[in-house]
Image 1 (cartoon, rainbow, N blue to C red):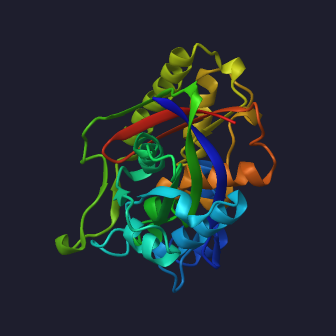
Image 2 (image 1 turned 135 degrees about the horizontal axis):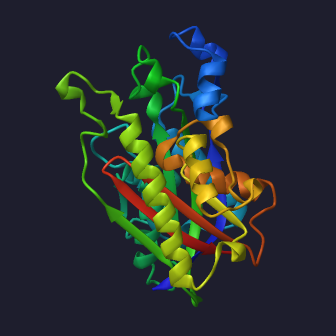
Length: 312
């Protein structure tokens, strides 16, 4: 498979900024309790916005920054676990709202926080039409609607947001990536509204052990496939679930702190949106320049996991 090349990025955040002090007015917690255990200082919650609207804004920004004509988009895939509708998919809504071609695939992927990585890989495999060489890949979540605001161990972790990327296949480079699944619905999940308990639940210790093991192994496998060492990589962008998880993975590679890019302090855990939001932040800071090599790696409910090498 050809490598996946990111052409442009975009992001969107809700209007409502929620600090840790704001959370302490909702539930029994404090800035010190949250920040020392998670690294999170603030997050954004939707207040009247829908999830598809965040995705639309992020997608529009990416299209504009990349100067990509809508007629050149050959696929739309949205990674999300919090769609506004059971059906139609968020991707179908975006096809309509963005005015994209009607003879292209548009669908959602629910791989939880691994959703953007899964979507990138699937989108890359779909790009066969030379007339439409680009795919629009989005991670967008509205986790505030799935967090029990009386459960301080859960509600302080999550935020809402969206990140988008315009991609194309690069036949001059080879694809390096891994993905997988280890079913375990007891440790982390979210039941549907018909169950009477539509909120996220989590066994924190089990999730920590899985995340640190599988993200470390997935990144190592990508390095092995590419014939690189961590010294050859400019940045690693992990799923932003918890600063302790990210730091644990970093220490397994004995890598400097600046190599592992973090946005968790600003946005909290935004699930499938966290990696594309991170890429958009890196883009804004001028870090995604030609020649740079970045490993993205994620995990979440399922359990799902995946990693990929991106070269710019």
